[in-house]
Length: 390
Image 1 (cartoon, one colour):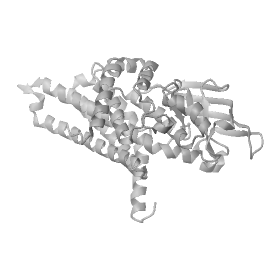
Image 2 (cartoon, helix red, strand yellow; image 1 turned 135 degrees about the horizontal axis):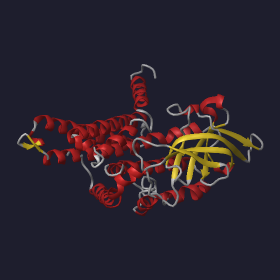
Image 3 (tube, rainbow, N blue to C red; image 1 turned 135 degrees about the vertical axis):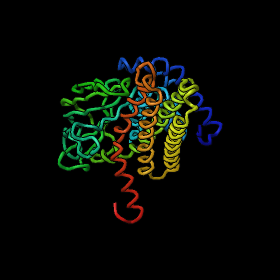
Image 4 (cartoon, rainbow, N blue to C red; image 1 turned 90 degrees about the vertical axis):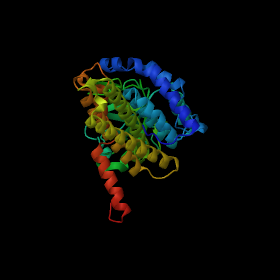
């Protein structure tokens, strides 16, 4: 299967993570999915391997991986356990704004233990009326003390569909000082699990990615000191958007891994399954399906790595990350669906992993921005680049 050129260091990284995933994640993946159970010991194992802070600079305690190298990590995890890949991706997403915008004190107290994997992070943006439209959030932050020098803030409201909750220890929470003011009133706050008034509500019962929890967050008069505000007042929307492109590349890589796993499972099954006097792979129709599945995997990988390389060069990644996430998640869904078809009734059974791949793939077309939103982003970038407006 076409994979593209890798350096010796990248090949070693890929093989190390692949062996780890096969040894630690694969044996219980189906059982964890069936039980909708998160195994925190696996997160600790990711930390021990150095993956919980891998794509961050060594100068702040990270692993120093390029984002291109990070896509190799996420592809291998996604190929075995999409739920754990999503958990790690969200943990990294919660750290990215903190690494960029945090003070030295915030780095020491909040970021360092997350980089080491001693604390798990979550990114709390989505609300009942604010999904794709992040500017519409209503979680309310009220200043405590003078408006120009508040001693802190009181948070009131609800977040939903927050991945890693309630397992996560540190939450990057976005709230508004004035719901009528739009993005200009949004600020970001660091909130620890166990803070008085901060409780967990309903846990989502999901179609796929069931071994990674997603829960409601409820804020009942939660008081947060000013030292736990990330950036200045009103910078929250900018802070949120600054890291979403990176998260989309990460998820695109995991989707590429899922698609690859579905393709490989289908190819092996068709080579072993005999019908009409020979293996299914002797049928031209089956060969064409496998070839087209391989094409979609290769396209997803190419766009994902191109987006990662753009980030490594310091270029804008809005269009590249949207193309990667949209293409890779659609590829995962299409390839997994074809894999189920090639397995026949066996693919519809929970005894085989391809039905889990299909369920997991569907979610990826929705989270990290729906693929309809990514079409809008790509169209806007296209028109702007041609001087035709945004």
